[in-house]
Image (cartoon, rainbow, N blue to C red; front, side, top):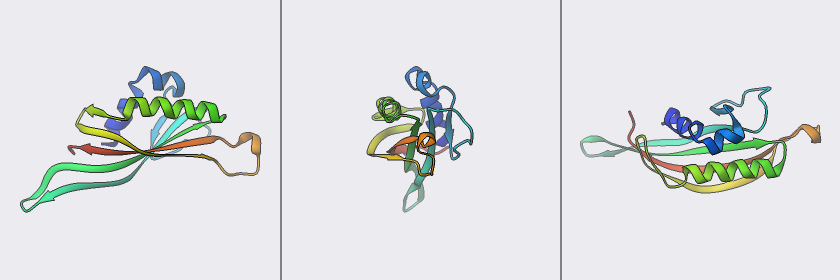
Length: 128
């Protein structure tokens, strides 16, 4: 699921036009330029019936959009949301926006603290 999720964003000209190739799953690469996207799997549960796994999983993915200005972080988050919310294909029956949060990273140097807009998406997919 994680690889397909990243591929969907990287294949979007609108997203890559803002974030370039700075779209990572599970790690916020130190020293990478802004804006950038960092994603994390929040939960992932495979469905079951009385015969065992039913071939359908539901997960939640957090997509963090980082930039040095709030406006750019918000623009990137809106672009990501437009690509992912309601998406189906590539093994996904549906990807749905669940919630958003606007924050700013901590630290003592105000000028170097990036802004972050976090988006959570519920995913319905067939695990491979």
